[in-house]
Length: 115
Image 1 (cartoon, rainbow, N blue to C red):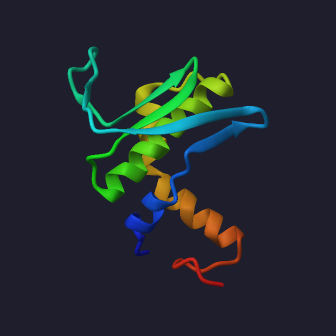
Image 2 (image 1 turned 90 degrees about the horizontal axis):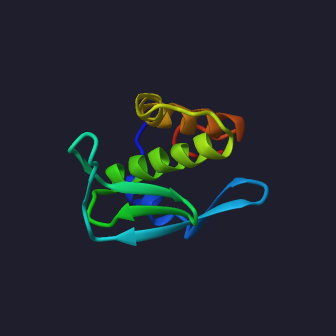
């Protein structure tokens, strides 16, 4: 399945919903962050008061989509009291292409998104 990552990146909204009355503002930044626990570079963050997802604008299209999905999973984990570990979030992030394919199938579209 060929994914148009550039097109998907353009569709990232300024605000995303996780529950009926819970939204996260989506912001872009050109700064890099370092996770103090792991010492690794991070390309996105999720904050919960206020609800905010920040993405690094300097990533490639595919990396940005994966980061966005990763941070969205963190938001879902908190909002639904799932207490997912970072490893669990990373594993769900890896499942993104299959989740997308599943949604397209439910919508009656083929792998390229066409009916």
